[in-house]
Structures are given as structure tokens and as C-alpha cells.
Image (cartoon, rainbow, N blue to C red):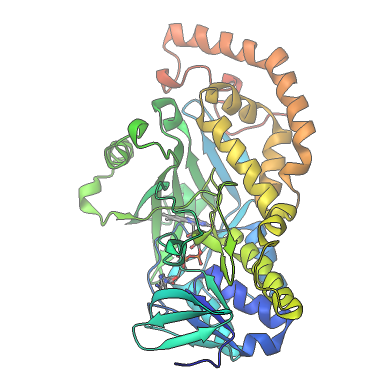
Length: 431
Ligand SMILES: Cc1cc2nc3c(=O)[nH]c(=O)nc-3n(C[C@H](O)[C@H](O)[C@H](O)COP(=O)(O)OP(=O)(O)OC[C@H]3O[C@@H](n4cnc5c(N)ncnc54)[C@H](O)[C@@H]3O)c2cc1C
């Protein structure tokens, strides 16, 4: 049994690495007593759109990490509701990377700081023993004071008694298709496309189209996310994706379909028990748009603070980890995104998407929240006031316009009638 490590982090994705690097910033001695266990070998494949939000970039900067890998810059995210498009203000999502390269770059940062990282060593069992934990891997048995579950959406640590086993997950699929960078608007305008029109067909999510480079060649990463957790009312996601791709002239059967779930953040979860904490996908991420990299980096920061405090106070209950998550930006914004997911994908989606389409202020707030510049939860009152204003002065009018145009057959998606003002059929220019 090896007992030279005080802290064991299971998983070396963004959440695991952020925990280790934040430990290093706060207490280098503790970082030296930390071991990251990784079942794969970097660079390993990770199914992901690779969108880095402004918030992700700010958090990387805090850790002193410069992006040293290829990326495609993004000027705007262009949202489409089936009737028209809006461009979210710049700064929301700025860069698209390949996750294999990004995560490998992060793992290099850990190695540079001389923090132990054992690849090809999956953790297979975790059990409490006295005042610590025993972690069994395929190779060794370790004894430590703290174990961090940074092992992704299928976290094995969550199976330990005391955590909440929540098997209902958001579903995502993606494909990579070769692109002509001279022809595709994604490369020409450096724009990421977000198609929300399927909300009108009962889907709680969207389709994205992001430009990226794979082995130096231009590709489009096209994916679909459905955050509906209720099995009974779920759409057949593969069929919906195939259909949507057909409308874009793409035959799904010609490409490798990759699927991976996400765990939407839930306030009902348990985030820590005695000696053990969860971070990143293992804990829960953005329930609305499925962003998870910045959340993983934020979890890492909060977890490192909690671990340093635990060693100082000799108290490994991690009783305040949960309240720290909810006190800080991470928890407050995730609660807002959870609420937003209910608004945009819930029974009143027509109104809320129409609201988003018509309010440049709300578009800016959303972009600034993902950009890390402003917190959406601090703007609740302003948003509520704007929503009332939209309800009384815009919504009815825009519905009347849509209805009259629907009668004339003058729209793209009849099922999505009622969305937004048709003034904005082109790129948004609203006030
Ligand atoms: C299709 C898709 C598209 C996405 N697009 C975006 C996007 O554009 N932008 C964004 O911000 N987020 C996106 N996300 C979310 C993002 O990918 C995740 O939230 C993020 O990867 C979570 O990081 P993590 O470190 O918690 O987990 P992971 O990145 O999954 O890392 C977990 C690590 O743990 C290792 N591991 C697992 N089990 C064990 C074990 N037993 N022992 C040792 N090691 C283990 C794994 O090999 C892995 O390296 C997307 C997700 C999906 C599914």
C-alpha cells in the first residue's frame, strides 16, 4: 500500500487538472503530495464541441495558462429560431479547440509543476478506512486523506454511499465533417451557429455547428444536445439529428456518430461527503447550453480552497463545500442557467425565445455571463422588468405579425409560429 499521497484526484480532464493547479497556487506543498490518476493516455479523445467561452479564457489566465494549441477564433454565436437569426455580442464563446489537444496541454501544465500524474491507471474502487480513504487502481492500492472525483459524467466516485446516484443525463451526439474553408460561413465569418428551432418540435436543446481544424484540415463539428431528463417524453434524438442533417444536405450514415452524455447541475445533488469531493462533469454542469469546461475550472478552484482549509483545520468533512459552490459565481450562475433551461425549453418557450430575440440588453447579458464579464444572477430584477415590458408591449404585436404572415405562408418553420418579431428575419439589428 502506498501512503505518500495525501490527495488523490481521479481523472485528469479540465476539472482534475484545475483542482491540482489551484492546489499548487494555494499550497505547493500539498500539490506535491497530490496524485492524479488517469485511465487513458494524453492526448486522448474527448467527445466535445471544444468551445472555449470568455469565462474559460479568464479562468485559464488566472492559472497562468496560455493557449499553445491550434484554435479557430469565433467572432459571434449566431442563434436561429426557425424564423430569423440574432448574433450574440462578441466575447461569449471566443475559440474552438480540439479537446484531445486542449486536455493534453493542461496535463503538460501539471507535469511542469512536478505534480504526479499516472496515466493508464484507472481507479477501480474507493472505500473509506479510518480517517482516510483507500483507492484501488488496476496497478496499486493508495491510502490518502482526500479523494476528488474528477472522473467525468460516469464518475465511479458517485457510487460511494452518501452521494446521489442520478442516472438521468442529458444526451448529446456529434459528427465531424470536412469543410471548405473558402465556402463555409463558419470559417469565412468565424461564426458558430446555434439552431434552437427544434424546441418547437419538443426538443429541450439545440444543434450547433462549429468550425474546427483536425490535423490541420478544416472541419465542421456538428452536434445536438437534448437536456430532457424524462425518458417518457424524450424525442428520438438520433432520428431528429439525422433529419436535421438531411435538411443541411448531410447524410448521417456517411459519418462517425459520436455520443456522450452530460450531467446537468442540480441543487439537489450531494457535492461532497467525508474525505471526498466531486468536481466538473461528475458534479454537474450548465443545464441550458451544456457548457462544461469553464464550470470544471471553477469547481477545481473551489475544491482546492476546500482541501487547503481541510488540512489547516484538520476537518475533512467538507461540510461547507456545497455552500461555497452556491456562494460563488459557479453555483449562482448554474442555478440561473437551470432556470433559463426551464424557460427556453419549457411550456412557455415561445414567449422566452421571443423575449431573447427582441431584447439586445438580454442578449448582451447572456453573452457577458458566458464571457465571464458579468453575472446573470445579479441581473434578475432587470431581466424580470424587461420580460414584463416585452409581454405587454412587444409579444402580442409580434404574435399578430407572425399569425398574419403564417396565414400568407410567409415563414420558414410554420410549427415555430409566434417566435420573435419577423422584423428580424436577417441578422439581428434590434435595439
Ligand atoms: C458532445 C459534447 C459537446 C460539448 N461541447 C462543449 C463545448 O463546446 N464547450 C464546453 O465548455 N463544454 C462542452 N461540453 C462539456 C465538456 O466536455 C465537459 O463538461 C468537460 O469535459 C468536463 O470536464 P471534466 O474534467 O469534469 O471531465 P472529462 O473531461 O470527461 O475528464 C474526465 C477524465 O477522467 C478520466 N477517468 C474517468 N474515469 C476514470 C477512472 N475510473 N480512473 C481514472 N481516470 C478516469 C477520463 O479518462 C477523463 O480523462 C461538451 C460535452 C459533450 C458531451
